[in-house]
Image 1: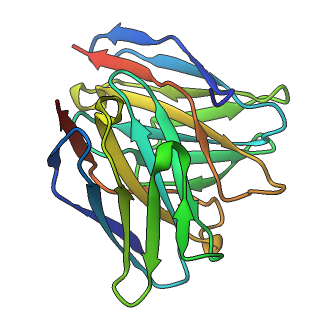
Image 2: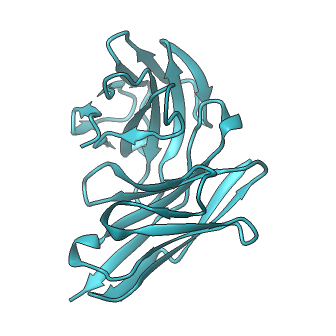
Length: 114
Length: 115
C-alpha cells in the first residue's frame, strides 16, 4: 500500500466528452504527478503540481489540465476526448523532504474512450 | 534528455531460476534510477532505487540491481524466481535537475514464471 488512492477505477466515455479523474496523495506529500500509460507501453509524464500550481509538463496538449487542493487531493481533467486517450491514468505523490526523488503511485484509473 | 531501453519485452524463466531483466539508460547528468513492478490491473509498486549511494541496491522480495556507469546499465536480478514474481517490470530514470523529478520509463518487460 502506497497511501495513494484514485477514483474511479474504471470509466467509459465517448469521443468529444470531458472527464475528471481524482487522486488522493499520501499524507505529507505535497507534490503530485500524473502519468498516462497506454496499453503495452510504459507510463508517460503528463504534468506535476506543487502548492496548487503546475510546475512541470510533458508533451501533452492543453486539453489535459489539472488541479491540486490543499488537502493533498488532485484532479486530472481531459477535454474533447479522443480515442487515443484510452489508457490507464496513474497519479504519483512525493514529498519535498527526505526522499524527494521517490514517487509513490496509486492503482490508476482505466479510461476507455469509444 | 533522458531515456530508458529495456531489452526484451517478454522474459520467461522457470520457477527457482535466476531472473535477469535488462535496463540501459541515457542521461546527460547523474541519474536516479528505479525499478517498478506492475501486477495485472494494478498500479506501480516501487521495487528498488539508485540515488548515487551504493551501486548495488537491494529491494523488496530479494530483488537487487547494480548501477554500472561505464555500461549505462541498471539490470534487475533475483536469484530464484517465484510464481508470484510474474508481472510487468518497468525501469525508470530521473535526475535532480529535472525540477519536477519527472520519471522517464522504459516500455516494460513482462516476466513469466514457468512452474
